[in-house]
Length: 542
Image (cartoon, rainbow, N blue to C red; front, side, top):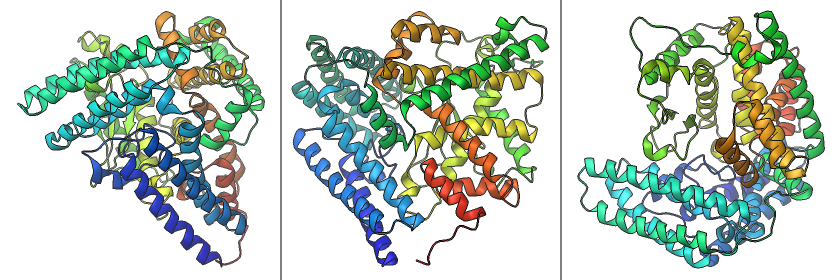
């Protein structure tokens, strides 16, 4: 019975992923849409883009409902089979979050930023291939035309965020037109003009739409459901808030004590925690600093017997974030590979740099931690392992709580291994944790009503963000809830599991390998997986 159930589940997973790749080729082809599976089959539809018409969205909601029913039925029938439970939960999370986003929240009717995000990421994925770019430009033009017709009354935050995205997308098209002109793609330029007119019309529609009185804060019940369905968090939101406040106090005390030990005042912890790049005899281009650090990191890890099974031979590309992507990506980011032969890209943005190398480097004092977080043993390593899993759902699933929690924990792991040793380096690690913790508190506090915008702005000022930049972050936390939690709560969960199983695993290397062997799964299932590995918890043979 169990083998039959898992076979049926695998067939449903394969069919559902293929359906989503065809219907939503952009959202299934990039890791920027956290509730979507990252499906390589989307590579077959590089000329296409999403159709967000109510009819096709409705069909996909119905298809997701059928996938959800299959996952629930088989999981209930085989409650003791962990591998089936993992695959069923991941399928359920993908299907349930599509339903939540498009049936409950009606994002295609109420969130203008969704249109800009699909268009920008869809074009960015094919910018190097004129044939596919031409097709997607035409598709994006139609996407904005449809959005202008069906977008309804907007919440204050969604309207404000939509206008921010409109400005970013206009800059994106300007940069993209410059890239196309260099390649002398005469066929594409007129279509880009049509796209510009269509997106400008959509932006005008956003400005003219009425603003509703609906709050952008989810409230307790909706926020709790989001955390459970999208991130796999079983904790109550109030419990998470208390955990974050305790972590804030602990990290704050650590930073104050560290500053005093280094001869600073306690309130000068930010200065004491700066880890400046090395001073070279000759000026170093900032991007070369990251490239050389990545190779240094890979070489160092290859010589560490306790580092785990890290394939440092598969080094990602390191690129300066091109102008047309700067509105889409953070200062440092990693883009997982999707198509055949892709090895991922480690992006670094220097958008505000003056061009002077020393000035550029001063803004990137965390470059060694950033490199660890985005590459080895952080995001790049995690994605490399994920793409080689056998399960058809796990190889396509990124769980944000696991994804960011692993990368944040990897920073500490590298300190434990001896890669970071200087006092300012170790304080830098605590500063990064403290900043992420405050962002997490803002995320929870804004949606539970514990914080208003002024209270959140005070927390943002603690980490050096003021004025317009702080307001942009707060707007993002309101309109894209939950994600900021993943850094701190994900790390704490990873630390808890490592602490529990370190004495049970034969060695650290085997423990680290086992942490990733089941995929990026919710932590309650990860704990059951580790119990099976190290606590002699067995299942009936399948």
